[in-house]
Image (cartoon, rainbow, N blue to C red; front, side, top):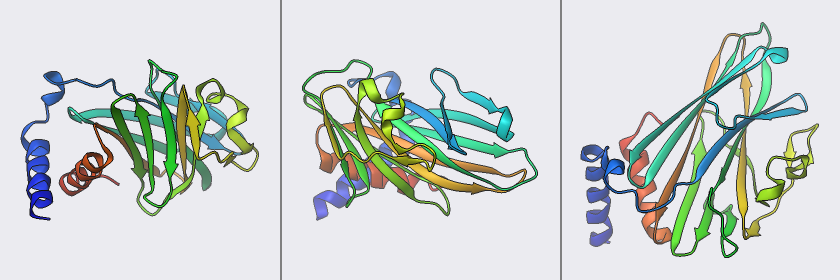
Length: 216
């Protein structure tokens, strides 16, 4: 127990004093984060862009990425409602490796509220949260299905097709349902943490949430 406390304090110290460690220590390939939005039976992905306007719904999506530690990447998704009515949306958070391997394993751990990506000797934790909203659904899908309608059990209702595990090239997706009032902006945070084992990832996440109290 004492060793875990000491490790936690060291990790918090790293997050406070070594924000730019990523420039010196990028030993692992980061997971690629692709945000998306579902609204009224339609969905869009923000591939290689940081902002998108959905004119039919008067919505604007903006994304901000921050490498806050060599092993932690934090992304914030802002959804602004410029209409005069309350709109129900789902923020989509997809993560996958760029250089995929056949021996990769991606799975959902609903008891711990985490998604885990295994790639050879590397392990990645995916999680997210939003004020007054919880992760609604998780899934792990083959990468070739990731950007298609095959991720949905019902695209009209915004329900993902639940699959707890995917081997080989795969993507994880989770959704957070939000009600956005007229002229309101809601924010969702998601983070990926890389390491060599799950215990290390859990401790890093605790340090992250303790240090970055501004997360949602």
